[in-house]
Length: 443
Image (cartoon, rainbow, N blue to C red; front, side, top):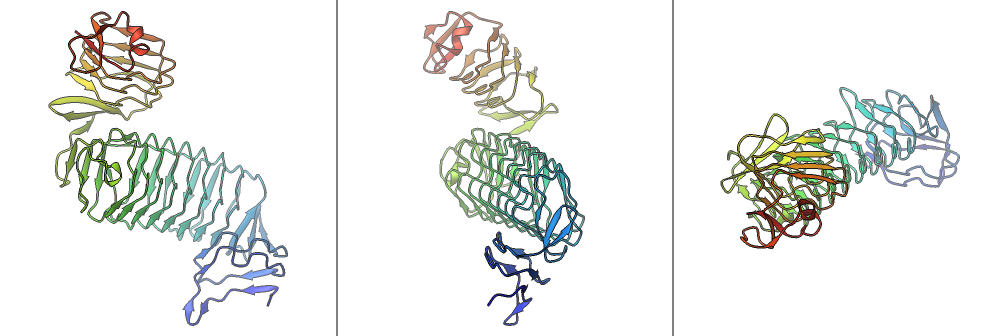
């Protein structure tokens, strides 16, 4: 039977009706009005898709199914500003997709944001929430492709972050996950290449980090990413290629890490393992979390071997040597710290946006891949203290055309870092071309 006015009941068989399923009333062509009870906390995507005779309540540039306190279904195409009415309970899928909004304020009354609701709003720089939000879910692809969004604080009221919800937000540099979130969906923050600061509420409810959730977040940097005490599972490739992740704490609640969860985290050298899992330095099990680890601690009271100075340079103490392992600052022209002797760790300054680097005399070693994939690096000066350069240290630095060595003679190319003889290197320039797959040793 088809009704012109659809009354959705608040209860059924003495139980509350709390959700409207995806596509629940698709193509019910004779519906003209919908009454949505207060008990509803979720409306699935496309719930009223194809209801061609449905009447909308207009408010400003927005159109609602039901009253303005119900479902915001759509907005005028390409709008650059809009006020979402206080009392609005749901923002429907595609409501503001491909619009030109610069900012959006979500009223406290909103309980859910549908899939692709703000998809590819390329001018959107800011999302603000009220002081007492009711928001419970953020749907699939809700904000994906919002390439100008720079920071985000998920309210504590949110329970679910849908798959790909913030995927491809290329300028998103800071994210705080609220205490109420129980699940982060697959690819939720994937390819957010500027994401540097990620924070979890330690006493929250998060149990699942989905597959590829933070995949290709190249800029993510932390000396100790503390995962929340409620976490139970980490999905496949969840933190794949998070190059700046140096240390991590696995909570007691964690029972599962899927394959490749930490693949490509080349500098993840410290693991605080409070979990029941067996984590061994250098072993590739448990998602590769300890694949590159030098230390695995089973108590969080152990002093870290990582330290960050006031300028953003991070050092690592290992095997009675000091290493510069990362730079967390914002400068693109680097003059590395002077003072006591240290080496540049494997991948120490790789995948950066640096234009010039000065290596002082107190640096003694440059390890494998130390400067790899610095596509804008055009100038490098190496001090007199450098006596060893690792394989592919300058690989994929296409703009590097000015290299100065304080000592340019006496170098040999060898297949081992401890070799005492090898092929004589005629000029510094040939180090990066003819001998990139060799160790370069100054006798």
